[in-house]
Length: 112
Image (cartoon, rainbow, N blue to C red; front, side, top):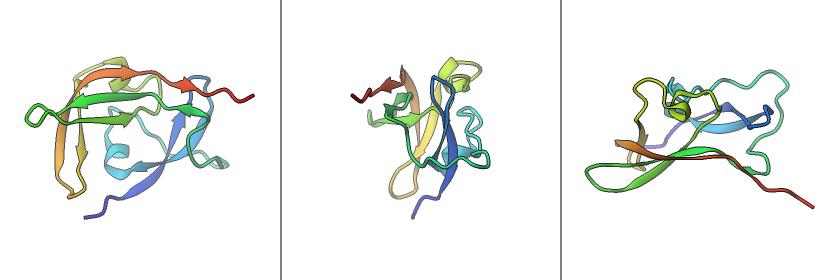
């Protein structure tokens, strides 16, 4: 079963928004805080950076997964509320729950 994708806004630590492809299920998860790109957002893809993300582990299998966090104020990034886990679908469309074990900040790749 194919997963649906839509465009969302990833905001860099410097406050610049970029239009990126996001799984529809992740976009709908309020704890991540994805928003639709504003009119005129033309960049498609992440800037010269490794985007910030959370890493989680599924308790039953021990498998890990990561999820991009679009904004510094997102609940999964700040740890606000009941945001100790996230769900992700595998290639067969089966949802799995991952317990957040770490948060990895944005890494800039400077060009010379």
